[in-house]
Amino acid sequence: MPLTLAAGLLAGGIIAALTVFLEHSRIAFGAYALYGNGSLIVPSLVAPFALYPGWTWALRRGGRALELSINVAGLHFGVGLISAFDVIFFPQDPDLTLLDALPGFLLSGAIFVLPAALLAALAPSPRPPSGSSTGWAWGSSPVARSRSRSGDPNAPFS
Picture: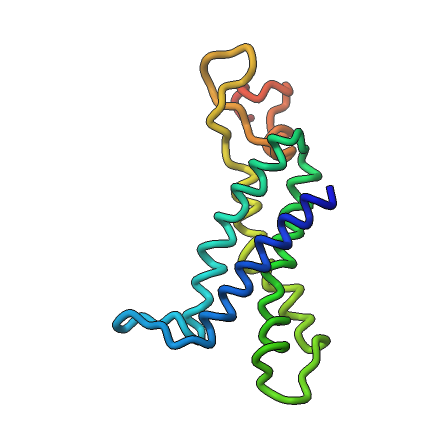
């Protein structure tokens, strides 16, 4: 499980580093700028896509819902490094400390990671259930599995 957390932290850290780099660059395409607030497009687009390889990797290793949520926590705090990187490399005030970056560290993932993780947990999986050639098998989400009263993942919701 620590490896799953580390994978999420690494992916989130890469997203955070790319975001801070673009925030302080002067990259623009016509009227569209990736610097300043335009850099927020990076975690908005890339963080939800970072869930897929993390969850796929955890599931192939036999991971359950706990490992998937630990990967989301790692990604959440990795994306939160945006504020820490900003304070360390580009402080707006010489008196800023890492403690001042704590709210951004804790809440950035709530904006960019958690909504996508909640939606992804409810998404159906394209693989058919064992013993059946038709129908949808719900993904690894315990929420999706518990929605059926009969316990059968192919039963209609009531």
